[in-house]
Amino acid sequence: MQTFIHYFLHFGFPLFFALVFFKKDWKKVYLILIATMLVDLDHLFADPIFQANRCSINFHFLHSYYAMLLYLGFLFFRRPFNIIGIGLLFHMFTDYIDCMMMFSHCRECLEDSPAIGPLNWTGNLLGF
Ligand SMILES: [Zn+2]
Image (cartoon, rainbow, N blue to C red; front, side):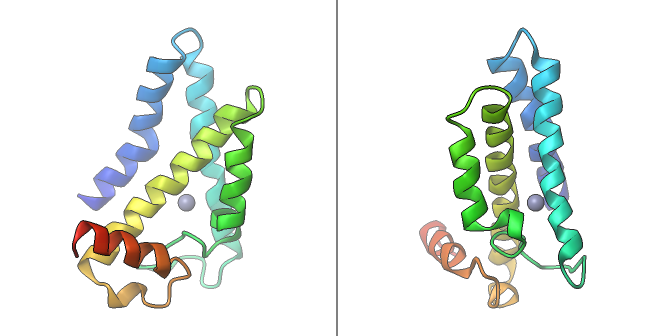
């Protein structure tokens, strides 16, 4: 289920978004949104590259809070930068939901996560 939600958010939602808000050139917009998934390339700099139960948020440098501020700034530029910004912020949101789902099963697993502050906050807000 978690995997399904993850891929739906990564591929399905951008399609919906492109179709609704950019009817005329939804294909181009969809491609740009999908291309923002390249931010996950920062995982290659991590050691180990893949680790189960790791929350990407604020762990990898393109998933850091500073990077997110930059993505927020992209929203104020012309296309395609604003669309790239939307895609990147949405990617962070998707990854965060992923972390949240992990966190709801096992709070201890993410004890050392650099995103533990917001996770605790959201967890308390949602009541787990
Ligand atoms: Zn990611």
